[in-house]
Length: 226
Image (cartoon, rainbow, N blue to C red):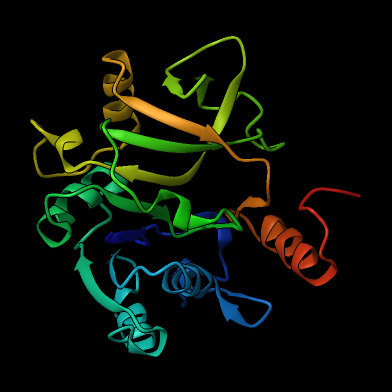
């Protein structure tokens, strides 16, 4: 299975760290955040990875190169300006082929076993959902059995880890757009499955959450626990 890492964000909430460094290269205990994804993908047998980029993207290409050091083949999907999550994936579809692919947000950290997702799906998308963090208490989607719905009695947070079928983008046009509306449309057709993950997950969107993640990795305790 091919994988795509979304790495084109501007990282405004992590300034000044991201003024001269793209967010995926911000070090977490001395290792760039995106390298955790690459190591895990390689360990799970993934060989081909597409990475989109915009802000300071040349630094990503210079640092990661061809991906050979992880046993990966990395292909880049440059964007003149960030196309958001949906537009970024749509722009990269020619590099991803016609089969479902693993999609990962470049600014999250998780120990979710990615190999669990390396299989075919009979839906347009399969999402990994997690408990709502303090900064996002309302959640995103509801999980009813193995079906993901736009809303429900208890919503969970989309982890940024998913399998996406290229057909999800049928009818989409080039440009800047978010992925969530396409997912909600597919949910309305009953074509999005999902699963709940209770393990470690962190949205590394601010300097404070970066520090929390580093504390977690140092101490071996769950992010947010006292």
